[in-house]
Length: 259
Image (cartoon, rainbow, N blue to C red):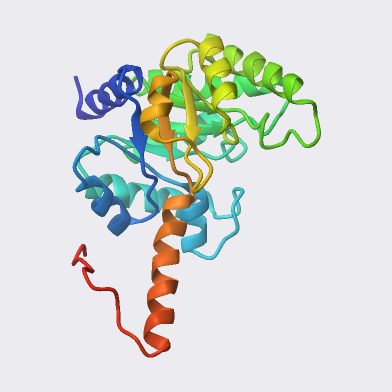
């Protein structure tokens, strides 16, 4: 088994374990090495929003794919853990983008459906998984549905029905897990997790809103990620420290040399 295939298998096993997989998303080499050195961290995931922001681009495939992949490749090279990449919506060709990500050493990834017609979304999922098979790995696709974040004023029962319809279609196509950003309510998480089956649901941890990860594990969630919020935590600490110094104070006591 190649190193890449072994990393992919490790990442898949982490998703199917009864213990919830928690991924604090990273955006550059120093954030990746800092998170990787944290006790208990077994894998890394990149955040496309955060990588784009690092280079001054707004979220949503505005950062050039070459630049995005270059940063991801640098992250992969800097750590010994499996790395999952946020592929966004696939940059117009989900299969080709996945192949390039795998060439960079990535063994898993998110793929947004953007509420496209379901047959198109399923075809994109299949293309990514096919790219993994061509490379000889079990690519760990975290198939994302935007049914909640794009719901608007649609009745909640209809929204959850669409989440389940799309999620089951992605699972049937071979995706091991389905990511539902915006899903934070306890009972809604319980309902969707039950509809997908054990260790099939991924959610995002939203500051001040989401349930604790240990409770999400009890509800049957497979994976919890943090998206752009870890970068926002870091930037909040940076701005607070800058304000303290500019305001006549000092940098925070207990600051660690992590770089």
